[in-house]
Image 1 (cartoon, one colour):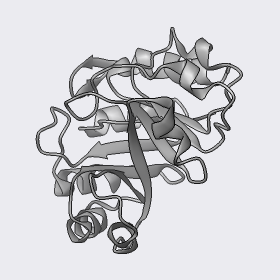
Image 2: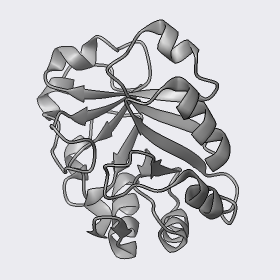
Image 3: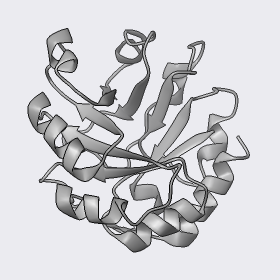
Length: 197
């Protein structure tokens, strides 16, 4: 199973994450987040990282033009987008590959996106890293092959995902020592646990 570790704020955490065999690193470009990083600081980290890892920028209700600019400066491969505007025009204005974030309040929120790759997180008033889990019963009987699951995941509960065949998992707070700083042992154990699903 593919794994993304989000909320990278420093080079040490990025290198530790990559050493676990993670597929992607996430950088938060939402200024109200405790895991916020400036585009230039992200770029300074990315240029020191090895190849064959994807870099993902997280955006919250940001204009497409700003997303394009930040992804260019920070060398992001993919934009992970939380947006109240889900119009086709909004996404057509993006120059970068993207994945929509669905902050699910019900099973219907997930099913209406069944034909596209999406990242599903639990709905909370704040944005990201709250550690709240999505109800797994919402995925029963659904095709999860295009779903990236986020929210409240850690090494001890990943075993509950067996049989769902999610495309990937995304973790932030579940592998942290504290907000904005990752724990290398937790990251390693998390990635090991994903390999057993």
